[in-house]
Image (cartoon, rainbow, N blue to C red; front, side, top):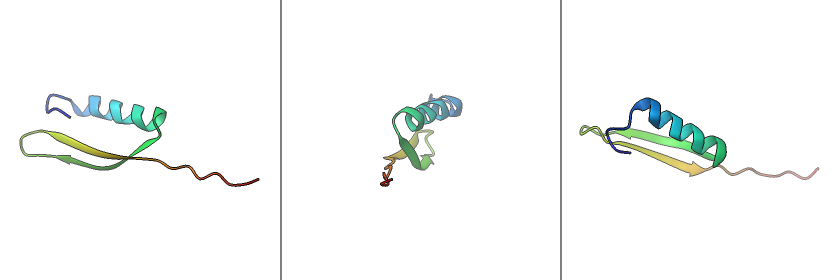
Length: 50
């Protein structure tokens, strides 16, 4: 994410990804130059027989 993105905007984007895209946050990193990097992975839902 660009360094101009605020924490609130980043949180909102990641929340939408998690809710609608079934992604989960794995790791975040803020570099000294202000660039934010987030790693997400696809959440896998295992279906059980009933």
